[in-house]
Length: 318
Image (cartoon, rainbow, N blue to C red):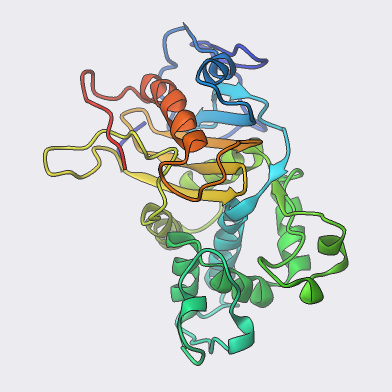
């Protein structure tokens, strides 16, 4: 794994002596970046983006490099699957979940939206590891609901609280018809999260503070295989063979007008980053969604500068 200012307000400044996020943290840090100015909110407005964003970028040691409304709460969309993955792997590490155990997918388990299991016939028997992989790599909602059922909502929310993720909460399973929704869902409540919570969790993961070495490696491997790379990974430069120059382990999330991406970028100075957004106007679920392309284009110069990417390397595209 490659080795790897302070910010706030609408026009965030990056400093060489950044402020830490949360309690003292362990891990490699490296020198802070030279002081630069980067007003992401103004850049987005100049590009015609009308929504709201929450952004947090740190180094692997948890030192804050850039922040824009990091504590703002957003509908979590599929980023809620990150804590589900890590909690499930923690259960496996503790011997309470056998990743090789097979689970029968019943007809009533299948829900619409992202993923593939709902497109296949009932009776399939994937393992728990298969389901966790599907939940992240293709954002499978059916797999996610099976994981939620196995873990239990109370346990998930208790674990989030134990980890200090005060802005993140699982309200209920995904894509259920109204007659199967719980009371909170029928009131219109949604799973929620913040950029700060997502970065804190992913930073703790990569530092080895959440799981042991084997399960940390598995979590990063699964996150590294995500196929939906519209935001954080969109403009990572590619080599002559077409492969990304820098590894990205991330999870996206999307609902109408909502576009998120959270993850770890193994640039020369590795970064832990979260960008959450809502209020976009383009309704298309497509990589060419205008809100997504604007967010990615505005974000990459900041990521490239903080990550110390190779000078002159042309940004890629998905």
